[in-house]
Length: 483
RNA sequence: UCCCAAGUAGCUCAGUGGUAGAGCAGUCGGCUGUUAACCGACUGGUCGGGGGUUCAAGUCCCUCCUUGGGAGCCA
Image (cartoon, rainbow, N blue to C red; front, side):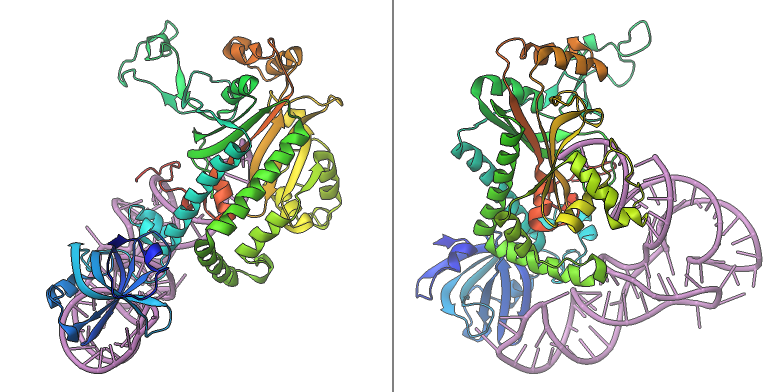
């Protein structure tokens, strides 16, 4: 009977022979007995293999045991016995061990010690084998599953928005071109630019920067929909919060206004955090301890007063703070760091865009909890956001959390055709490039709202990791696509 | 893209003008129902690349590359 380590660790000692497959984390050996910590990825916990050399089981030779080194794969069989040592309830008393794949100790880069995350990023093909990344990617899976469950339970339909898009007016950022034209001597127009009518799709195409516009179309028939797919931004962003390829969840709901939208977003985030707390206990416990150790190394002023798990519990049990942009500016204008000129960008006038330092102050110092900022000046937001009755602001909302910053950006969409056309004009978006988006407002237009949740930013918040490149298996960023 | 810092053994780092070091890992030996085991010995380096200053450069200067932190863009 072959079992996963997560299964084995729930069993009681018995005379039944069990077989476990996995990889060696560490080995401690002496003349008479050897202990092997084995992990198979099913859980962060290791199974302790005990090899009693005196017993002289067939197949467990010195040659085989010499191959049992950190990183090697092993298949072990034996009886589950109560552990004599502390640290584990049960252990596998081995009667046979085979090593399907060795890992030469002279070359294998992972050691049974703490490695820097920077180093592990350089060995992206092996970092899955560490406790940290095992925990992170199990949590990532759990969050993926919980997202689909949340929406499915509430009558939403998952829409696969296209990855290749012909729309270049989405305004969300620089795009990656998709083309099959030859690199050398592509067909040119008279003015010397590339003739994309000769390209694969008969027009210029790019990788999507957002599934929102397409989700809106679906919501106008299916009511409640969401997308969950990869998104691509060709911005030259070199930060710990940006990727060139990241995953985004974008719900879109017909007959829903901004308040409905905020309620959905808040319920959604709390659900996901509660799901992680309930279903990823071991992994979050490990990440929380890791986080606490890192916290100790920080200067006093930057230390957090809650552990990761405490922070997650706090967020799932308390309501988010909701403030308008106007109120946020008032708070910032009158706050101590602004008066003492500690901000790099002083807050003086209504209309400025909130900088990272301002958002951090609001979230980490003033409210000390997630904050929803609403009703931004229309000049600093997108063309599709609904203009408020004051004519100055739009029905937008951003959710800011400690550490990961802006985790959600959403809005009530402009459903009035004439106003949307005027807004597109102001943003210099040619109407013919979004004719289908405008068409939706001609036929049965309704109030509707939605938001985008950056999946990796959610994971940063849930796992306590500080760099977005550590919560995605294969990070893509400028000058970085090795694995 | 801009600002700041860093790049020295497989890993983490010390070395600020005068013969390249430590801890961990690895190898060998010892010891022990061990828990990132422990003890001893040994091995291990184009000091990120290129150029320059100097009798002499890991160290000073220029330049490029990469990484980290911050900023902008945003999720």
